[in-house]
Amino acid sequence: MRIILLFVGFAMLFMHHYIQRISVESQFLAFATGILFLGIPHGAADLLVANQNANNDKERFSMPFFFLNYLGRLMGFGAILWFFPLIGNILFIFLAAYHFGETDLHHFKTDTFIGKFLVTSYGLVILSIILMPNFAEVRPILLLFKAGSDNLVFINWLDSHRIGLILSSIFLFLLSSAIYYLKNKNIVFPENKFFSIQFLLILVILYNLPMVLGFTFYFVIWHSTLSLKNITSYLRENSSFNTANRVFRQIVFYSLLAIGGILIFGFTGFMFINNNAIMAYSFLGLAVLTAPHMQVMHDMYHKIRLNHNA
Image (cartoon, rainbow, N blue to C red; front, side, top):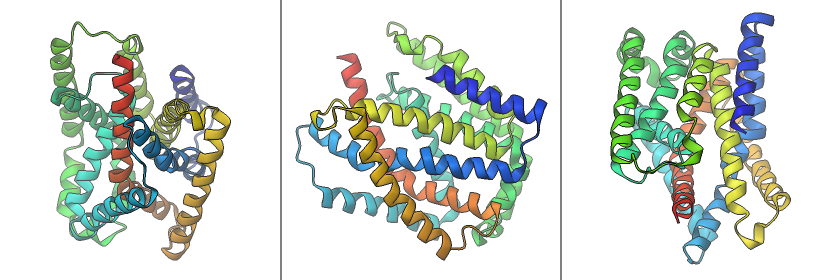
């Protein structure tokens, strides 16, 4: 699966640089289409995953409690973004970095402090390679909201320290990797055999793609596809979801509900007035959803690691 996704990434790279440059409008269309068919479904499965988490812990699953807890986290993080946008966005970057890292490295021993340091630094490298070389595309999205203009000094600081931020994230990743392997040199997972090559190829793709295409490749094609694969395998361990078709139907149902809510929010919030607005509201939506979604997926990956090491 990962080899196929890497092939798709290099095909995008080859198309954009050597055949026909992909227009900005086409980039946003690809991003929006990917969010609808892959991004939303991988998040819409949170209810099913939480149910399975409870079953694995031999606990009773309460749907009302799940929604109360999920919406509480969502609104809590939304309040942080509203009242403290700078702190909220920095927190979002670190949460997203951890979530991306945990998904890609879910077979690593990441329940220790060093493991968490490793997955977070991994995700920070990914995000820095997507955002920093393409900061000219990022800046107008940040300035679309009042919080962006209020923090113009910080945005200018990011712009002037782009290279330093990329190098710092790479240094943290190399440091965490060295410490991790020194502490776990006797632990070898077959899935990690080609990890370094895979990671390097991802960075080559992301560095050479525009920001929207890079985010489309990593978040939509890579992250969402692998997440859906992991979610499907995890849910099929439960006898009530013992076929991929049943899992698929459930995910489609909850995805349609989520898409309906997004469309209502988008039209009432003027999300679709231009490309930057689509991207800005998409990032805002992802930021608000990160806190509750990350917790559900963290619990899932913790149980996958326990089963893997059993």
